[in-house]
Amino acid sequence: MQAFKIIISYDGTDFHGWQMQPEAVSITSCLQKTFKKVFGQSIALVGASRTDAGVHALGQVARFWANLDIDEQIILKAWNACLPKSILIRQIERITNNFHPQKNVLQKTYYYNLFLKQPLPFVARYGWSYDFIHRVDFEKFNKALQLYVGEHDFGSFCKIEEEGISSVRTIDSINVNKLSKFGVLQIVIKGKSFLRFQIRRMIGYAIDVARKPELNVDYLENILKNPNPQQNLTKADGCGLCLRRIIYKDEKLIKK
Figure 1: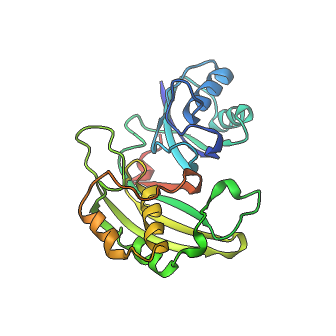
Figure 2: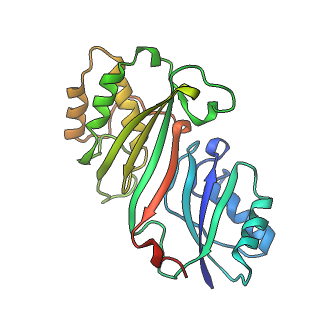
Figure 3: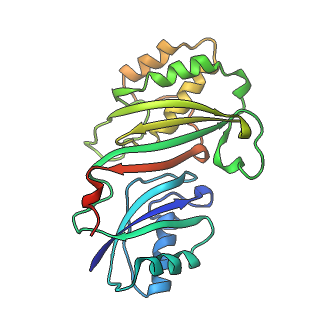
């Protein structure tokens, strides 16, 4: 059996996330079923990031094992030809057996797109149109976002599903860029790992603080310092989130 690494882009709008679902179509199930149809083999994909329903990716990484003595580019073209247009495998390569997409991650980069006005139809599904955006104090919004940078317990910003999982994570940087052409405020977040819903709640909480005069940045800082998953603040929609890139330690050692 040969181990393969793939890099995938997808529009997550019509899928119930990356992970396999018993009665729903996911990115993983679509890739696996298509592979079996094309190559006559069943595979089990392991992804680097379990993106939620509606979340997009430009650089998701996954691994699978298969008995294929075929050139990688032929595999790539044949597989892509049968996938829906919302999924594209960008790269495939043979890798060493010890590579695991969730281990030895150096950094992940996520984008969150926030529309400042009603979006054009061909970009509408790749950002969040927030009803109260005209009331947001963007200076206050940026100050709120910078509170997250560094190592913190993000227990107030996530959904812990497995007992014993630590909610401590480190945010390397958060930058806000205005893309005037598309009327988008793009938040670029970098870190080694993230909890489920963490980024969406980070964005949503910061928006709540920035649009409500009765809330200040200290309120958000208090939530950060006193972890409690029972919060009544906003969770940003999945449509605005995109996994941009994953960097691994010793990437040159991954290749076969």
